Length: 211
Image 1 (cartoon, rainbow, N blue to C red):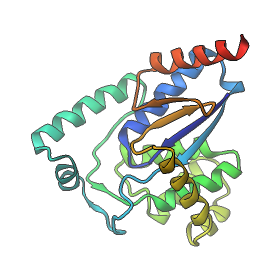
Image 2 (spheres, helix red, strand yellow):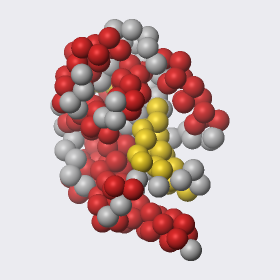
Image 3 (cartoon, helix red, strand yellow):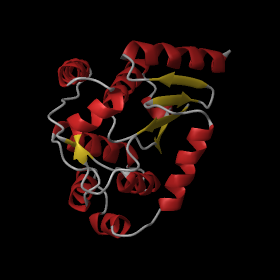
Image 4 (cartoon, one colour):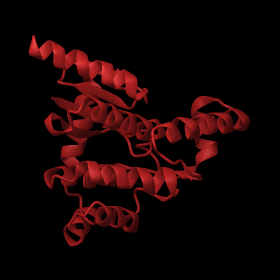
């Protein structure tokens, strides 16, 4: 079974969705037969390197008050805790293109999922800049990737064309929000759904393949 997880490191619901999906895979007992690929999507592609205040950015993007945003963050913390992900304070939002380049390389090394988790923790738990070279290299080390090779990727434009191509491909498929989870290229599940939703879809697809 192939799963394409279209997401952005900057997306909090992507952290919830990934942990939910992994919980479903554990219940489904199919971890060894599932190929999970992380595909790039940028929520904030036009942000400058120094980023922007998170509250200002979200208030402008969603037209929400600070009180509404605070309530949403609390609900997000609760959803995260329910699937084992701890949200901290995220004071700023940043550009994540370099994180996607490093994730592409990590996929070639067979360590993409480990790096994805490290990047999500760096940003959503510790509030670090997922586009900063030092943060990217620390996450590469956490994911047990070769740090000198990771440094070469980070301090270059390597895999930029590949990431842009994948972003354009999924946009052409109609993916405009994340997380978007595509199972076997025929079943789409959107949003940070509970594990039960993913588990039901996995079982339905497996049953269909077996019949």
